[in-house]
Length: 212
Image (cartoon, rainbow, N blue to C red):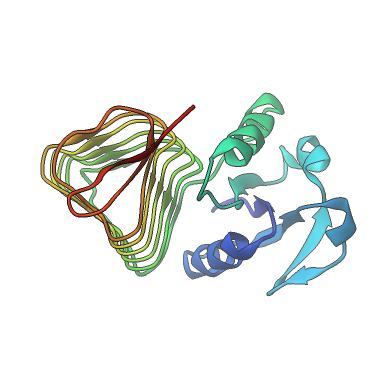
């Protein structure tokens, strides 16, 4: 029997995770968000405190970070670390409509959204978002704290470092490597390995903005 969940962060991504978690049979105890939002309802779930209250729930629930990641994963990483430092456990949530091969591994705090597919031999790290209709093919590796956005195709044997964002409907060619802290814009085709930190986009994807 799964413990109930505490969701940390109450924005738009939180709504998607509520739906995914309920589809997977979880009970949600509440949401921790900003002080001014305490008492509000987000869909079926009430905001019951702030992230300062994380230690109060470590023995009663498991946690999921429900702040999104587009420009930077910094807030997600901060909240993940707060849960860990408090002794809390992060749940791994797989939507009822998703498929994760029994030969794949999924890290703690990761959410696999509706209709996502994770094939045999794939390894997905901690606190990752595999968004709706994402396809992670055989033997691909997704590093910690990544967001693989809606409809993205991560082909076989690809290796992504930590803290990457891959925009919607992008395609990563078979066997390429993407380094840490790289953002790929929506609709891009990454044909070759990329390792310089920054923002890439296009077909083929090229470096548009080098990280400072």
